[in-house]
Image (tube, rainbow, N blue to C red; front, side, top):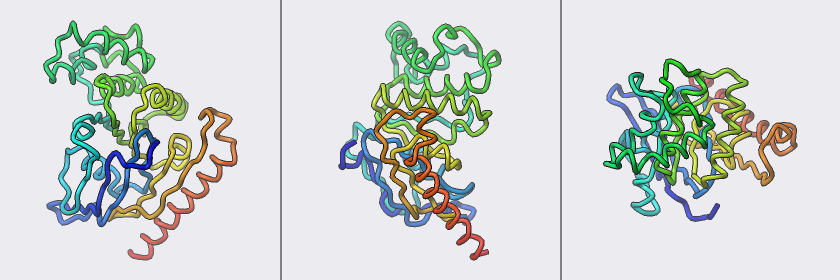
Length: 256
């Protein structure tokens, strides 16, 4: 990672038409090559911040400053639900973003097969979503986001609905992908343990309206595997993130 941000959220606020304030004075840098988790209680604006980064929602005030326009145009998004086209097979679902860019199937095929291989779905090109498990559907969704090799991958609680064993496996696969591709990842989660396992940094959000109240650095350069979950660095990151989150929840209770 380098010190110059890939992008910066500068004093972002977001109030919806219902007068609900989702974000207030949110400032946060995203560094090239990092795995950054946004951690906070439900409804604290994490997903709203992600959608503002993706350009899917406009901020009410503040600005998103990108390092350059090329980075701004090079973003992939993985939603909480796989959002696959049920009438299309796995290959066709992953082809979609390339087709929308006018790339022919013949040109796209090597990249599609590569993306499917990266997420462990080689041989499932002709399968339909109804034939896949929840974890496999999410792998297709990740492959679809990766097929254009984005510089920035935004992930909105992609593993929240999965069982713990599948979630752990996909956590490991995601770390391998990040290492292989060098993609910057911003990952929304409400799990302290998941954020500490995956991240270089954890941005802890206050309860609504959301803003960053603490940054937890997870300074570990070795492999992230099951032994890492027993390491002092992991346990300390969990403790710090949990303490910050508990403080956020206590403050929210005092305000109600």
